[in-house]
Length: 464
Length: 149
Image 1 (cartoon, rainbow over the protein chains, first blue to last red):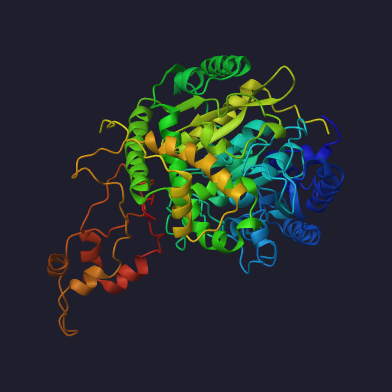
Image 2 (cartoon, each protein chain N blue to C red; image 1 turned 60 degrees about the vertical axis):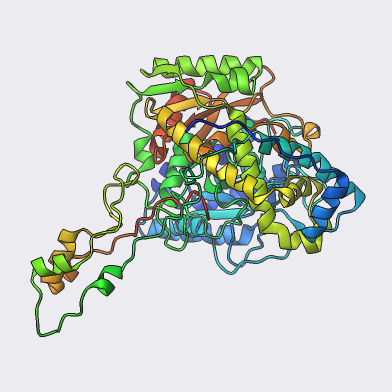
């Protein structure tokens, strides 16, 4: 660990120190802004730093604390993927198309966090409109992995993963349509939650594919994701997909021990469908042993092949993303990055019957996944077949040619958390994915938190 | 239901692809067209992997879950003169039954049922002032709209 100091605090730790008046939100915000200035030129995690607004919000939090207000998010500095609309602050979706877009209202999620006292540090890099891969033909460069800056962060919440891992923000907002929260969480060694659809409002979040999109938290630990989810979750009558979720405190739920839980190990995913590297296989063996050590019963679970979920997810995403952007593609085609065009233009050729077939098959897959989850409390699998690849190894058609393990949870409409499951011999993080039944967000966070506590992997940070 | 065999996706020649792209209103240069050919090969493979053969009656994919009608039952109720105070029993009889009782398992929480029960309607009709005083504003519960949006 180098040079992090206060900036490497978890949200839970910082919240406790702030509440005890041992840490000033202004001091913490200044430390993070200084680290952004020093480190971000290597990472390109931030598209925009909102220093003035951040310091004003931190001072307001400090006044509120002096007046006796308390809360786990009060004075906590965060940053948002640049598809979250922010009133009066540029929101670009990392695209030339929206380079001058200044929304007039905050996304509902942003509003909730600010109401809870959070401090916005700035807007974070993404893949263009949350689907393009790392692109070098856009006005802003792609984010780089803080564990090795030659490597990919994962995406599309690329800046969110890099910023949290590098200690540039204590938490971040991401979005996940096929794995966009969990892939950067895995490659950057942090925690990221794709919640149950409807639990977190998507109003004011620039969409990609509405039938699969979810908004969610990213942070250093599962416990921090739970604290963020407490602020984010809740019915939004202006989001047609929003649902009143269970009335629970996620932050409190994670404290419960795991003794007696039934864990399903989805071996076929990483031994057959998307074969994992030897280090991933070892990590899964160790993770299962750690969970057994916590009193869980770990048995093999059998789900349909990853390829089936992936085919359905990709056809839906391509169709819906193309429909969303068709008008702009007709008029400003060359303003999009090449990787965006490759991943979206094929949607123009997908027939309505094929899109409907994908939605029908999704119904089956939701039911089949639900049946398996009746026998287990959670399922575990790796989110990726290995550690972060080099940026130069990324191909524009990767989204189609390589099945994503993470897309299973999007298609099945279930919550899924990625936490750091281990490290390779070269020091790159490996993720562990924990999937639960719909509305089992508290359960996946609880398993993630207890696993992190037992595995003892949270003391290691990138050297920058 | 068990997956049916996947369909085969007809191949598209570059000339046919040009026609389809023109029909979509897009103008691609040769490099962009080459990228599209590359991507389409992958997408066609994904489409081919999705089972398509189903019985005609087995189509439930596109469902729209509308919120329960807030005032539909009031609109359906016969107009009652202000001078005649309805009894709880008559009010409950006049009110239509909820069209669909929400499945308990699918609900995320026990509270905040999206459909008023007959009992609560009857109580409200019997003593509107008391019911109004008791009533707390509840968040409307919606079912997840997973598809067909």
